[in-house]
Amino acid sequence: MSQLSTRHLLGIKNLTEEDVNLILDTAENFKEVINRPIKKVPSLRDITIANIFFENSTRTRLSFELAEKRLSADVVNFSSSNSSVKKGETLVDTVNNILSMKVDMVVMRHSSPGAPHFLSKNISANIVNAGDGTHEHPTQALLDAFSMREKLGDLQGKKIAIIGDILHSRVALSNIFCLQKLGAEVMVCGPITLLPKHIESLGVKVELDVRKALAWCDVANVLRIQLERQQIKYFPSLREYSLYYGINKKMLQQLDKEIVVMHPGPINRGVELSSDVADSKQAIILQQVENGVAVRMAVLYLLAGVRS
Ligand code: CP
Image (cartoon, rainbow, N blue to C red):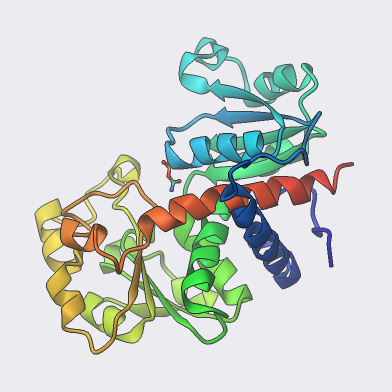
């Protein structure tokens, strides 16, 4: 198979296993390209891409922009904080105005779950979801899977624990869908207040004790506490969270194996990970960021091949 089954990347849920493998295999080729002295290829020459961010981002926004430039696309960037959205313009009006400038693809981050799905029904450009509220963050899950595969080989039967604020995390849901399509076993671990009700119906194991989760897994993908999405108190204090769920070097040294530690960023240092773990060789956090460019190049390149 050399073509995706979809013309938008709205989430991982609706991708096929073949789609996921095609993206990861294509990203391997692009990783080789971006490590050459000349990092640019002409694959998306004459394609214009708009990066439309209604929420803050460092890694995803820069990574998409670099991926687009490495593919020779023309790029325009839009941030809601200094735009006419502040004057009350709607999402569809904003995007249609951008598209009328002959934009072919839209990469969008929005705080409302489903915003890119809504947009895909109203505009003709290819849409890439760069994170929609607490729903999905598909390119993060793909780059996480790519990084795990690079470290461990085939993910069939591998044990991945997703630890932390599962309730508010779009990374968790996309990771669960992606890893299950690749045959991995998935566990979620966190305080009961930060685990969605009925999460086990997604076919994941549920564990409240972080030490047991670490002893079980090959990879711990540790998530950020998303204080900005928490309207009520889910745990007494960050200090108490860190005491019960923070991962430090001593805990990793007590395991009878060396596990891989991941984090999508941004990290709350000293809360979900101590600095001696975040900066250790066991943590592949910066490799994840590096792989993000190759994975996003693969996504954009493949979607451009499925234009309407
Ligand atoms: N991982 C991630 O989405 O980071 P940003 O919010 O900085 O893009």
